[in-house]
Structures are given as structure tokens and as C-alpha cells.
Image (cartoon, rainbow, N blue to C red; front, side):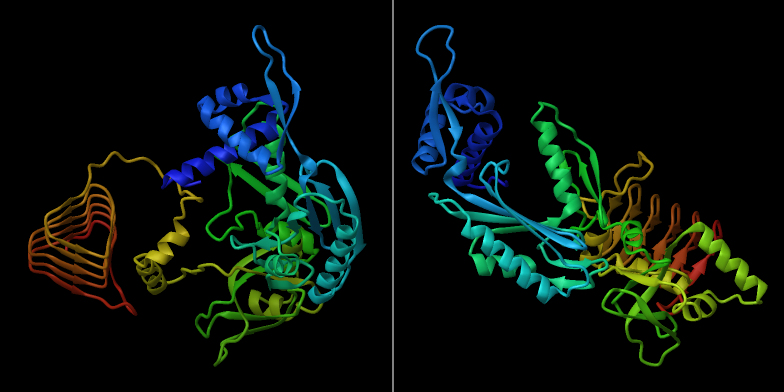
Length: 471
């Protein structure tokens, strides 16, 4: 919780005291104070608020080595109820619990093999309604719902894709919240399993900073704990491993693709509702469908078999002889990646993709703090800037005394006074002398551009200078 105001501090203290009671009950006020560092008055005031709210109660007297025995506190688990749902590939399970989450008050489950989302949602609601009909009377009634789904879930709780069900962009969380008027938390089953395991381990007094939880059932999912926190990635589905979905689907091959448009010469897929590839096209005048990113997952023995068979029949096109000719005989399916995707296979595409890094939204997606990129250390000094530098990425150790705009400069690049560089990618150790003008240029390492030289490239045809060349 980000602390910005006094009320935030108080809210944080309230939840910390409740957390201590939940994890260590029965517990005294004095023990809470020792564990949290809060003073006696603060603890007593907040505990009274929780008692008045009907969520804590005073129980037996604790042990004392001298003086008055302390009154111990425990949570009132019967103050309300919660519903938990597990939506697997072939069935749905639902339970009604008290606030401890440990006492199951009622249970429902039903198979859902091959059913579409409207039908499954209708049956889920009927199951929840039956659970609520068995809910005992309590002060708060139903206080919330937790939903685990065996698929890809983003940070907002939107179900982006569920393998073998064909569900895409389903907002089940909002539908349930609107129907039952309670908070609904929805996440991938792997993430929830990792959080549950972390909670169980923390109850033993041990604190694991790193944890990988693999959940194997009708599907395979993974939850990752790093630095003591759930690792979600920029979009929230860092655990959506392509291999996991490939294995769960039972497909012969999985192709990674994107809904983002691209060149006409790329390969485009048409998919059915289950994600199976039903048509493969390329060099189309108006591209439609999902653009292939040329990433494929398949068994090693199948790959060898396909290559051997193609060689025996003088066939050498992966796109034509495998993707197109064998899509009906074999099960090819797609893994759709809706985030930023870039393929680099030419000098032009390298230049364009590099220039895209100057856009803040692209940098945030690729270099998210939840997904750090580690590189070799280099103790270069901070870059020196005595000229003009606009919208550029500058590495350590650069000396910029000229004009730089919309550029990417690697370590140790030197731009002398009077030099003008725009739209360029300059590798390590490049030197641009006084009065030189560069536009749309890519230099390899240790290139020197002499005084007064003009080098002009274009985004469609960037000028490339080889390593160590003096121009």
C-alpha cells in the first residue's frame, strides 16, 4: 500500500493488526504491539474498532508471568461467508466457506466439457445460487468471491484466453460482481496456487523470496514468486507460458501469432473458436487474421519426421509444405500474443524496431520493472552533455557536445561541438567530429566520422557503416 496521507497510515495499521490476529490468534494486544511496533494506545483503539465491527472478539485469558493476565483476541470467522470458484477445462467446482477459508459450508461441481461461455456462466450462477441458499445467517452475509481460471488473465482480471475452451476477452469478474454485488477477485490458477503456497510457508515462520508453483491437472499452469511478491509481468500474464498451453491443448504444433497488422508478405492464420489454425495465407493484398511471428513449439521427433519427409519429396518451404499442406492432417493451433511484438529480419526492420524504443509506451512494455533485464556490468562514467539532446536513449560514458535528436547511442559515443546527428543508431566507441551531419545512419563499433562529412540515410534504407571504418 502506498502511503501518501495520514489516513493511509491509519488504514495500513488497521490491516496490519488484523493480519497479525489472523496469523497468530489467539493473541494479546501486547503481543500485537511487540510484533508491529505500534504503541499501546493505537493498538487498543484499532482493536476496539474491529470488535465493534463484529470481526474480532475477546476470548480466554492468556498466560502471565506476573500481573494481570492478558485478554486474548481471535477473529470472528462466522461474521460472513465467501464463495470460491475453480473453472477448469472440463469442470467447475464451487465452495462456500466461512471467513477463515478453512471451513467448507457447502460444495457444488459439474462437468462442462465442450460448452461455450454463456452456457458455463449460466450454470456457474445456478451453482452459486444453490450455495447461497445454504449460507447460514451472519452479520455480513456474502462478503466476496474468488475465482481461479485455467487460462490467461490480465492485470484487470479480464480472461484473455482459455486453451481448449476458445474463450477470448471474457469479463467474468465484472459479470459476477454486478450480479452478486460483492467484490470479485479473479486470477490464473497458477498465480493463486503460488500465493496460497507462500501463505502456507509464511505460517511456519519461514519467508521464501523465490518460489515456482506448477499446477498440473487438465491444464498446466505456473505461478512465480520473486523478491517475495507475485511476478505478473507488464500485462499480468508472465506465467502464460507458450509451452504450457501447447501441452495442455494436445496440439501437434503451436504457432505464436499476433492480432497486430504487418506486411502483406507475412504469413496470416485464420482460427476456429478453439484456436486451431484452419487457413494459412501469405502475400495477400489485404491481410486478415493473425500474423505469424515465426515462433513454433513442437516435439523434436515430429520436427525430424517432417524435415525428413519434406527432403524425401524435394520440398523446402516450411510455410507451404508444412503449414499449408499439413494443417488438416495434423493439429496446428495458435498462441495469440496481444502485447508488443516485433520481428527483426532485415536492416530496415532493425532500424524501425530500434526507433520504436524511443516511444515511452513501448519502452514501458519491454523494460517493465516486474521483468528486469540483466546485462554485464560496465563501470563507465556518467554521460557528459554540453550540447542539445532530444528524445534519445543515451548509454553511460557518452560525450555529447553537439546536437542529438531521436537517436540511440551506445557506450562511449562522442559527438563533438557543431556535429548534428538525427535518427541514428551509433554503436560503442563511435566518434562524430565537428561539423559532421548524420541522418538515418547505423554505425558499428569504433566508427569515426571525420569533420564536415555528411552521411544521409532514410528509414526505408538506413545507411550502415561497418565496424572500425573511418569516413
